[in-house]
Image 1 (cartoon, rainbow, N blue to C red):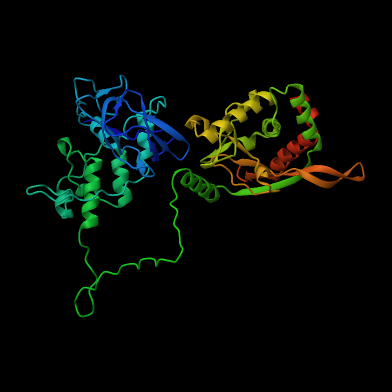
Image 2: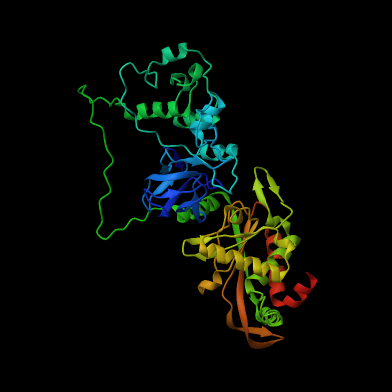
Length: 467
């Protein structure tokens, strides 16, 4: 029976949580029929199966997290047919009459060991980038199976005999070399199971498992007897304590924010603005065409785009010793959903006037809350706008969305005393806060951008007229 593996869902995602099964054991399935809904770090998606047949096994329970490439569902071999044109790396396309062909030695064999399963239909992820991304994360060693009589151990425990086999170790995959290097394993001591002694990933993992399960020498006591192995005490259970695993979207947010704080030397500037005229301009634009309203977020987004065209350093990224200016504005905006915080992206936002930008923001917000955004709509941003004022707060030092270099936060707009033409008045006042990467610019650029956006907020008709 063919096993359908959890496919690569794109953008380097490495695992997914099973939300609900759309089929049961014994059901007949057709090619491209959705069989399960999974939640990745980016979105909830329905996964179609490339086979037709009868479901014989489901390999996960709702709530279980599976790694990309793990068995997801099995279809009875007697009725299974495969989707035309869908193929796994290093494996021939199956047909109703033929089983999948074995991988060829060399690159094909390594592809079989490193592949993550079928690519999700419609995502079009290529093989090479996926293997490079997944290889960057070291897999835990697999459990060592019992050594059968006459079987050669994966690890040669005599370094002098391993050295006699020659200095050139037959390894094709750089991922295999990295796995061994990260674990401190000498590849000269690993017995390769491939053609001509080719060392594959499974050989390295088996060698690591043998190292992990072999007894380690214990330091001797003064009397010559070995000291017992010391074990770290298990954490004591606390009454009422609850442990919530970091996974899915929450794990992705944790990784992204930690990396931002770790790598970006950020600074923050802020300014209070009189948004009375902005609210009036928005009301006038909406009244002109009630069927196609303009949101407040869209006007702020338009001002950001105009500001980034004047101060492009804030619409860049850092790569090594270079600042890369992309030449376009892919505007990300923070959206709170039931799954957590996501950042949809409007690509090419500089080409959209305020009304079209408003429609694009509304469309992506609705899709984000429905969990239907694809990876392309959640990645590639060059600048982020965060309207945390919707939570009823005035200001916040927002965390930059790595690898971007700036994020603009907007606080709530409320009635406050404000001086207008020398007279105290009640105005609609809010706060703008810009966090920026100090590597790409100094306070002059950051302050210039923030002041430009603030001037647009206070004089929106002039700003939109010049746009």
